[in-house]
Length: 126
Image (cartoon, rainbow, N blue to C red; front, side, top):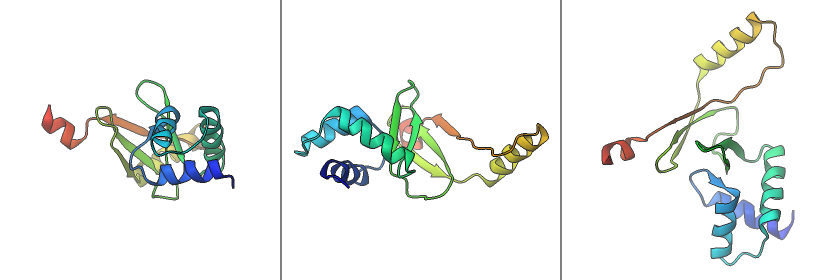
């Protein structure tokens, strides 16, 4: 555990929503952390490989990261306007996905589901 990895981890722990590597880098520098952008990318990839953060593609295709509160398989609702993220469990979807995979002879199935829209607050403000 390096000083830089601890700093990335601390910064992620302080955030509620998903953040890009560049946004995380900017936040860390604003807080006085000394770390390169390349190191942030490398640490985020390592944390993703170790399943310590969730990674998804934002509406514009950029990878964004977040330390999630739910430690098992889950999905997200994501606001395209403000970036708010809500973790959800979807047992009915899980059963559907497994059924479809089984129907077509697939095993060792994995999937991700991200639902993009506008949150209640953004919808009300528009």
